[in-house]
Image (cartoon, rainbow, N blue to C red):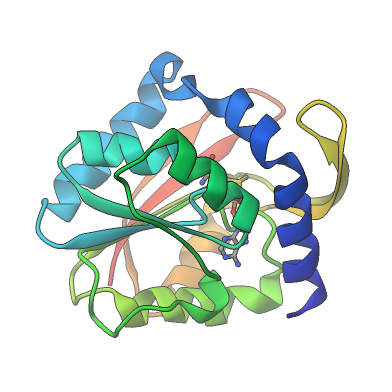
Length: 208
Ligand SMILES: C[S@@+](CC[C@H](N)C(=O)[O-])C[C@H]1O[C@@H](n2cnc3c(N)ncnc32)[C@H](O)[C@@H]1O
């Protein structure tokens, strides 16, 4: 495993319980993110499995299931998957990496990468996005949420002061769109979140 994957896994193993506490119920107060997930659920169409890649504690996976999506979660961090299984019994969660998706070609009706590429260095993006393209059925939707902007910072602690060692990357929607196009996706829509704050985000909706 490369250094960034080892560091990311160890960091999220350390913060898993605290992260879950921090985000539990967060969708209730975020109508724009809920709307984005509803749109994604509509695009995925309720027909076949949908992966929440980098699902963390599984609250978004469970939300999608509540919208009628046959969603399952996948995450690099075994501790996150333990928390997800505990908090959402009956939902399928597996340990695995987006760099080597343990999924058949053209097996998914949709894939969500919800702030899960934010620790992925630029050089690893093409392999991951090509993997997303490989596992999606032709025409199936991909939604990517990420920190908007430019640059990277090293995060050494989080979620109540727990030690972490991850780089947090910001990307412009234009740069992410270009990466998606290189991997074979067509980007159909873009949502800007908190555009006038110091910490904006974006969601891109694409199709394979
Ligand atoms: C900022 S959290 C986002 C979690 C969740 N998607 C959410 O919206 O709250 C990033 C998550 O991505 C996972 N992750 C990072 N790189 C990954 C990879 N290569 N494969 C699978 N999961 C990964 C981390 O373990 C972590 O749980």
